[in-house]
Length: 297
Image (tube, rainbow, N blue to C red; front, side, top):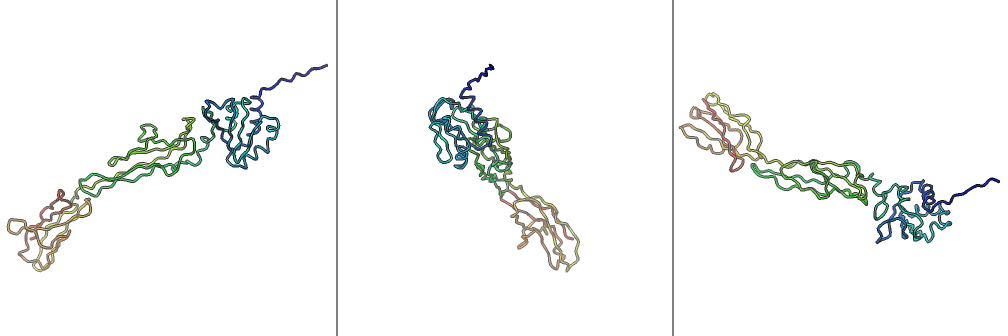
């Protein structure tokens, strides 16, 4: 007579086999240890949290064998959670990989497996740029704020400024120098897992320089009765330049009343108007430039 020998499977092996089948539907769930224990292995009070109550109910309905066989003795289904209170039947570490999770000292979490909410650009730090409208001044204002998008559960927001390394401290805005700020979410249970990196580069304000003369007033000849116009154009500055034309008909330059724009016109010029002319341009108290003289003959 032929004999058949049947080996007894350990509970851990049996549960591992069952969970491979149970989680073949890829239900998203998280395991958590009971409070005040060092490890999830071989303890009672294990909690599996599903995304929805429907997922928890589907798990229970699809696996009556587990409940009837007392593997889930004293299991309670409430809302989106199944709480297992029977101790020393199987280690959570055997179940964790089937959930696509990460085992650590306090639980098994699948939260780090999904960074879909943190696509490139979704995690940009908020930037307010510094400004400066004063010639010779110093840029003021400017700030860096945390991204509007939150990192997923069980992850930590990190910053990297100009490649100096990843830290959790919010960077300080540099009012005068451009910096590049990278942001990402890193898994608390496995630092090798992180989201895509979002990058922003600051553009601090630049204080304007004193303007420069682009076109000098040009000397010219005229006939009595002509209208003669002198003109100057400038580049740069803060955009608030004032002008004062002067004439020198007797060896000393004197202000011409009312001649306070970038052009100066002499209507019905006469021989007495054959003089030297120049213009003084002022932006601020410490920013004055004077044109070359132009001679009318």
